Image (tube, rainbow, N blue to C red; front, side, top):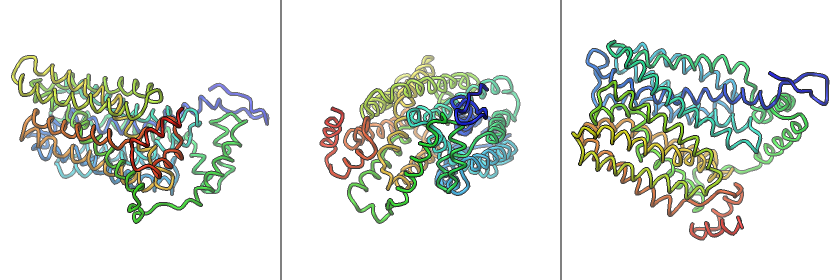
Length: 482
């Protein structure tokens, strides 16, 4: 690593930009694990379900897939508190250990009960990572690069899912004759868990967390590693000032939800989280292989076809990240939802009209790719961005906690009941159900989501307080921008 001269002393210090890049890569292995562990079940389920393995029914398939998500819901609730108490770095170390041992537990499972237990534990690690990694990245990033650096974690999540689909296809086709092929798929997740555990050893602690514990000297040492020396002290002063002001801020409690503007923001946050899941994204990310099987592909061909879903998810995420600060949030969200809903309707119609046709499997694959292009290019990134923007400081802990918990719970319900719906009412009706939520989502977002691009968090909060009419809110936003 190239060194640069510290102007204040004779000690050689690492290049801040390069060291920050290392920090980003290592910490986002948590996002990679998140993606792999949620995506690997996509290809593993058909092999788990075999009678000589776990002998899964439609319902127990849903339980196995969704148990991780239920664990993630609770992991997201407790992960933030753990990192506040123990620190971001040490919490990531704990998570890497939990990732590793729960993965091995899943690999060695001999029945449904055992694998559900270990996937729940794995979910605790996934949920913890979903909270701690973005927080750590935000606190390590320079202000002018924060948005792009934090969204790197979202990119790593979809990359992890894509890698899971690729590895599933390779292992499924190379070892498809083995009765334990699903165990080979699952055990791969142990490798990035080990890499995260080793990598955390070089990570510094968050300077903001250190400052919040009164360790200003340690915080300054960290800042000098990831910033130019000339601005490290100034940033520490800003962090210290913010922490002191935050201590004086009265936090909002559950009883304050009766206040109209607070209640409106919380309802909006819950709606954004629920809509993002009930439009069916994880029916494809968890059960894409099963969907392609149901449309007519053989298992090995379905595993290969599902790689296209993972690939387009990564490409769409990259494109979405590149334009997210260039177009209005509200318009981009609505465009994504309209594209998602049309894709869902087309899947349902195709299942009614073309089912049994030789081209039907390829039509379904093309439409799932189209769906993912709209979702991962707009709805997915904007869900987390809007949740981070609409909650003011005094409401962020409570509001984000409620909204993210509802998001994970909705994810759990989709994962649990999708195989049951697919088995009971078929592809067509199942995707029409998702499309109906898409229509509700378009209506909800169109009526209630304000525009936030170009506004400070304080301006957004003030507009919520003074405007009950969101049309008037958006007019005010245009005035601010002018």
